[in-house]
Length: 206
Image 1 (cartoon, rainbow, N blue to C red):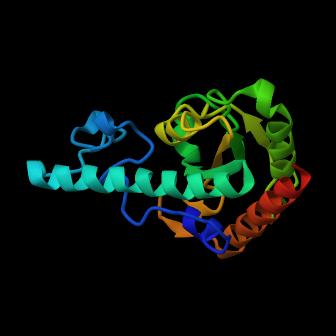
Image 2: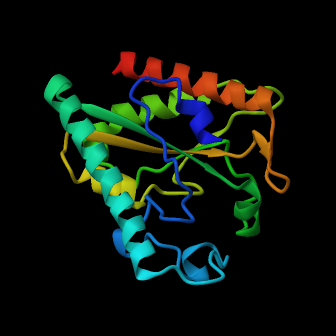
């Protein structure tokens, strides 16, 4: 459901293929879920993909990053700074199984960020997330609680240029029934509006 939250924003990018084909948030070496260990214990394929299929998937993986790097380079040329709101969702039940009693609605991963350089931007983003109002749900925000933001997308783009800030933001699946896959339209609309307002406010404050 994350694409529903971002697709009306300008300069929005979202994947069109499942991460069960290739995972953009892992290194190239681990991007293909060829074993259960690479896909949360789930066997994705009954029959292993051919080498040609794997090469096609990796080509798409690399094409995505080339596309992102080109977009970012243009933004840097024009504005001298690029802020990327890296929006993900996560399963609440999976975190509770790990022993996390109260997974937050929003989690910001900052492990790979230069906090001396981006301290104000990080604090402002956490504040904006906390201002998001959801129907019947208390909005709580955490930093590095369920995820610390160490994945490939953040790592690769942060290393591209020190004028790039990536904000790996996780939204818990309060907007759906995880087991049945049923989305709650009123909640997802509130998340969408809240995130969009938060992004616009964050940019203006910075």
